[in-house]
Length: 224
Figure (tube, rainbow, N blue to C red):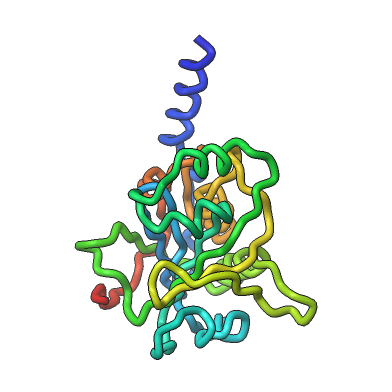
């Protein structure tokens, strides 16, 4: 009975939006995106806006191993250290890694950063856009920056290569567990940007269902 009650609470939380009304006075200055990987979610942002340049915080030439580092977009994801780095595909999942990530206390975390020359194609990637104001974008960017560990000089700490030549893993702040996973991190970031999210945010797909505010995204190319 307790288990069924817990499932019902989670189900209601998945369907319930955290916001019922939107501030229509907010300008729609910047397009941001969320990518749903099926289990994991990432936030995709333009490298440069009139108010913020990610190259000032994380040098583009250090993200991946490819020779072209003039990325137009960066994706950011937060996750458990061992699972994230060692599980590039579903085929690489190991049960002991999953158990450790979910149930061990104080798991260390990492940030995964990927560079994109163009937006992913919606025919192949589950990606959704929402427009936000410059003010909300700066709050979002600040949250993401504070998620990175930095050294004594304030520089981010690169730990390993990513899943492809366009990405890398970095030291992160915060402990990963079943009570705070990658999707909770995504939702915490989006809520600071005044973007709607589900009340219960443990899964990536419900985030896509609720991703909206008063803004409509400006048209952009959707080709790699």
